[in-house]
Image (tube, rainbow, N blue to C red; front, side):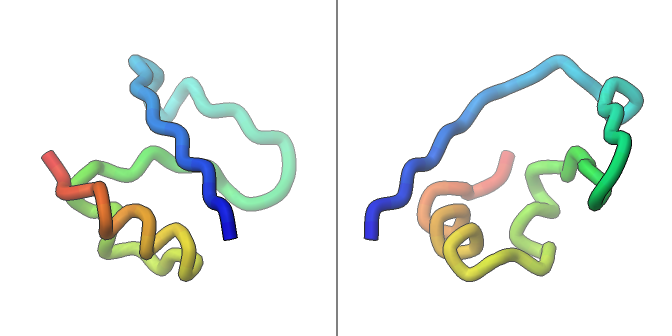
Length: 53
């Protein structure tokens, strides 16, 4: 399996996110990401290279 991972930064804040339908999009603080219920692939990728702040 090939997985492509992209990382970026933004100056946007939660109030800048506008979503008209579907699930909510939220910014999660870096130190709380791995505490979330994640898809298996997301959890694996983030745990390999995401050490927090």
